[in-house]
Structure formats: C-alpha cells, structure tokens
Image 1: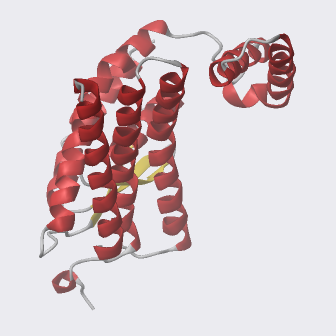
Image 2: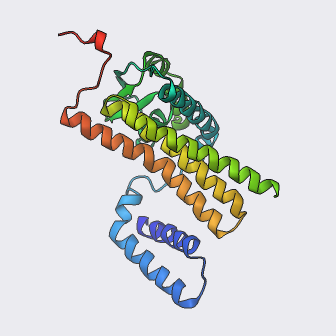
Image 3: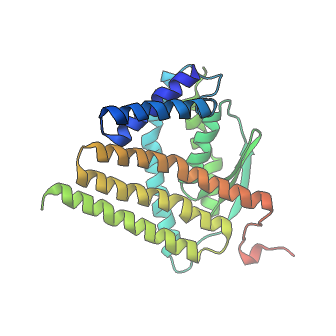
Amino acid sequence: MSFLITAIIMFIFWMLLSGHFTFILVLSGIASSLLVAYLSHDLLIGEGDIKLNIARIYRFIKYLPWLLWQIALANLDLVYRTLHPKMPIDPVVIGFKNEYKTDMGVVTLANSITLTPGTVTIEANNNEFIVHAIAKGPAESLLAGEMQERVKRIEGDD
Amino acid sequence: MDIRTIIAGILLALGCFFIVVAAIGVVRFPDFYSRMHPAGKSDTLGQSLVLSGIMIYEGFSLVSIKLLIIIVFIFIANPTATHAVAKAAYVAGVKPWQKEDKVIK
C-alpha cells in the first residue's frame, strides 16, 4: 500500500517537474517512479500511518499564517541585532520537556522554534527540547509556551 | 512598467537585503551557535522572498509551480539542516559563548 502511494506521489512530482507529456517521457516517468517507490517506500510513508488525517492537515494550514508572521518578526529582530553597533546579544541555552505524541508534532515544533524570533533548536529527542536563545527576551517568550500550545492544538486528540 | 514588475522588484530587493544581513550576521556574531541564527532564519526568508519575486514576475505557469515547490522545500529543509548542524556541534561538545561578565572561573 505504501508502495503504491509513494509511486503515485513520485509520478505526480515527475509530471510537475517535467511539464512534457510525450509518450517516452511519461513512460520513463512511470518507470523511474516505480523504481524510486520500490527502493524507498518505507521512508516516505511508515507502515503505521497510511491513514491520512484530514483534520490535522486543516489545523496545520490554519497554523501557517501565524508562523509566517512570526518568521517576519524573527527576521526583523535578527536584522536589528545584527546591524546594531553594540550587537545586543546574550545567549542562553534552555531546555523544556517534550510532551508531544506524534513525530509530526515534534518536527513542527522544532522547525517552528528555529524559524521564530531568537531561538534555534539544538536537540529534539523523545524526552526534551534543548534550545539556544540569542538573548533573555526570546528565551522567556518561548518558555511562556504560546507556540507549544498552538502546536498541541494541531496535534489534537486523535 | 506594469505593477507586477514593481512588486517582483520589491520582493527581490527585500530578499537580497535579508540575505546580505544574514551574511553580515554570520561574520559578526561571536560563536557557532549564534551564527546559526542568521544562517537559519534570514536565509530561509531571503531565499523565499527572492523566489516569490521571480514567481510573481513569471506569472502563473509551470515554472512558478516549480518555484513554489522549491519554496516549500526550503521552508522544511533549511531549519532542519540548521538543527542538524547545531546538534552535531552540541554532541561534539562545543560550548556556547556567553557574555564575558557572566563567565565564572
């Protein structure tokens, strides 16, 4: 099953990137997507989670505008810290517990932390997150936990 | 000059600005971990802005769909790569830089 899904995704990707619909190119597309799917279908889709969670994808899309806004803020913050003559940085390393059930939640939070103001994820394992913050302010606003709440809301109960 | 060219130009200029700031940041910041901040954040936004500028200039076509795929890929891959490099340094035992007056000897 995961073999078939991977092959279809690969073929759609092939068609998007090629843009040519001649017989020989479509045929080589089918051949190569089958080959790639055979070699790596267990990497893209794990055996367990074939079921597509539509609600979760919807909640993730609802999360994106907030994330984009945070990315904009992060870059303005970084521009200020970089170009300020005195360079107002005071790095601290903080850690907090990992309370997420799904890999997707951990990945989303880790990447969101890296993209949002003043923080970079150093370690995200099953027990804890370790985060490098460029100053006290960003560290405190991360520990306040607004982002954790939002990512938890994406994960939902199911 | 139509409005699309102007918007594309503004996006390209903004993107270049963020990439330049990221480069300055990588040179100016004191240690490895703080250098990951400009490398991980401003590069992501800068590259995405440049690519969206080209996308708007190009209009809706197969090329702009390819660019959109690249943007999505950058948004996933760039922070992940930043995290991978930072974690490698953490495992190897690189100590984070601290403000001098706080170092207790």
